[in-house]
Length: 260
Ligand SMILES: Nc1ncnc2c1ncn2[C@@H]1O[C@H](COP(=O)(O)OP(=O)(O)OP(=O)(O)O)[C@@H](O)[C@H]1O
Ligand SMILES: [Mg+2]
Image (cartoon, rainbow, N blue to C red; front, side, top):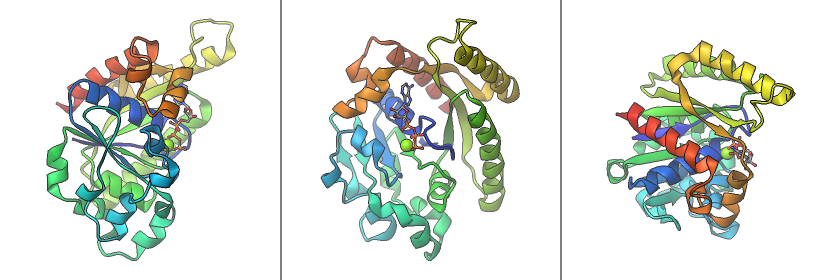
């Protein structure tokens, strides 16, 4: 199963969710590969790869002679492997634009890689660039993290419009796995708290608009989620009994159910 974590708006928790979902699936015994597509390399850092060690990265498979298999690395987490991103991916759209079959380069990745994992999770950069279109074309599903704030709501509408165009233009088969409400305020129940009230209102709107496409599970803002990458650990390793791990367990059960 190949899942892209996407949202063209920046800072909506794509990488954090990618790493936590991957960590949760790996902890549940699934064999998982994370492919970092973002030249900022945050998913790679979060899985413990230092800056000087990012290459060879996905760029070698996309633009060079390397096979994807040769780029796969082990991480400190059992069942969890990684293909890093590096700065060479920053101008990937310019390079991809000149290549034949530019929308399907990632689909040129060998079948054996797909067959070696239960889940491959793609951490996309904040755009709907050619690289992201490649990710979508290689995916069975895409998952959209959504922060319940006004600008993200506007962004979500634009994102789905763009995805509809991509779907028509490139004959995409990837389906929406779900919208994940993330970074919600821990104080949302206090009616005098304006952030909490505002988030509750936007969450209600999104649940009404997108119905069952919104995961029941939602992820609360938790400093431990920002801390985990600095140790190269997933939230399940850093705070296995904390709220975030509990929320992700709920999410992972839903993901597995939806993928089946
Ligand atoms: N649930 C959460 N609780 C606390 N902090 C979070 C949570 N989710 C994400 N963050 C923090 O918010 C910031 C943005 O998250 P993240 O990097 O995952 O977003 P992104 O969508 O991948 O960003 P980009 O668009 O730049 O790739 C990071 O500093 C991350 O640590
Ligand atoms: Mg990111």
